Amino acid sequence: MLNLDIRIDTRTTLRERIADGIRNAIVNGTLPAGARVAEPDLAEKFGISRTPVREALRQLEAEGFITVVPRKGAVVASLSAKDISEFYDLKMLLEGFAARQATSALTDADIDRMAEVNDAMLAAAMNEEWRKAIELHNEFHDIFVTASGNDRLAALDRNLVMQFQRFRLILAMHGSIEGSARQHREIIAAFRDRDAELAESLVRKNAAYGKKLLLKELAAA
Image (cartoon, rainbow, N blue to C red; front, top):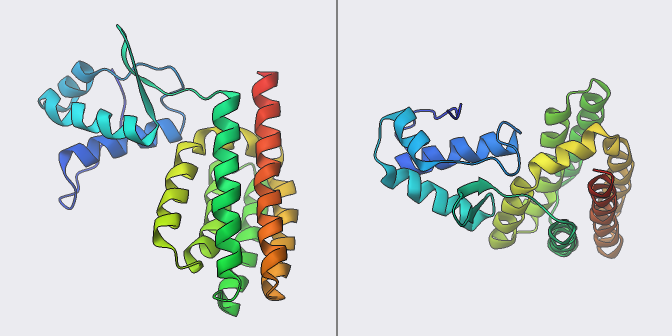
């Protein structure tokens, strides 16, 4: 039986609560790649019909978290080298463009916050608080992506990042945070200098760094 944390929240529908619970379990590693996510088990666990469960699984399939396999049903999606390359190529384009657009929009307070988050990220990694380190890494990038003013780009970027959360945790545990922190400091300096071209280049370089390391880990596995 799946052990999912489905919290009661009257602001969301049952489908959304089920989808959130499964998504969080995947991101946190409770449900590993290839694990079966069965409609009957979920329906029985929560004493509900299969309809909202089926709707939640369809939503997660559209988001890339779930794959429907013939004769097996819904399983947690696994990732190939091609998936990783495509993710980081998109991240490179989206966040690089966002950095260029955000350079003139970021306030000094925004940039100071990025520096604080980067220091906290490194401290979390030193304490082996890997999930916290990844959350702070995401917050660092989200500050300038939000400042770009492109809401659709920001939403797409956040969805992509969430799908890869469990795999990026692997990178954090293998020492990638220190390298990212160094690159983040270079990005911060470019934003302080209001150098849009350099900021875009460094953000793209940061995504390429993650891509290289994760592909290396996949090959080793």
